[in-house]
Length: 217
Image 1 (cartoon, rainbow, N blue to C red):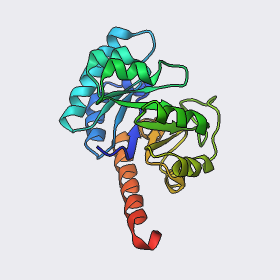
Image 2 (image 1 turned 60 degrees about the vertical axis):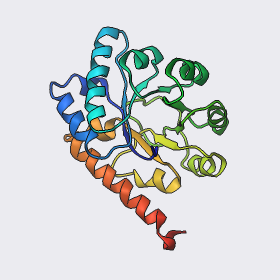
Image 3 (image 1 turned 30 degrees about the horizontal axis):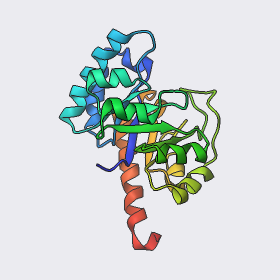
Image 4 (image 1 turned 180 degrees about the vertical axis):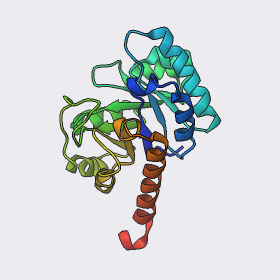
């Protein structure tokens, strides 16, 4: 499995929509790399039900489902992996609980040192950001696009960019070296999330084709 592409992250507001499962099905069928479920805090029973329904949708379309922060929920739902924040459980404990095949991602904010540590500890991808003004986490510390270039040169691991990414600015982190574009509002905050996902998948694919061209090397 190649960890490269568009990486949508659900929002609380979107998950309250009565048609959210139908839209997720369209998005999962659009060629995304992974889907991340960000459960609402304080509603464990509801979160488990949602995770299992999303997993069924993703399984049908061969899309990995990643759970944000919660190793226990990931294990109970049978999801494909977990994304850990800087203050969450360790990568080692996630690996012990979820097994060798689980996908484990790590938030590294603007720190190349955190990314190196995550890589050395067995993370499957690292995430940097925020790179632009973020609706989902407006207080998140900023990161410069040059960080992606440095990480690309220093790390042999897939790199995700997050924070305010949308159709209008997505090429910038791609050109700087990001493999994965993780986004919340850029997909789920749009009037038509499925169309936004398809457009972004196409943009990513065109970038990859251009990058592979001998003229771009």
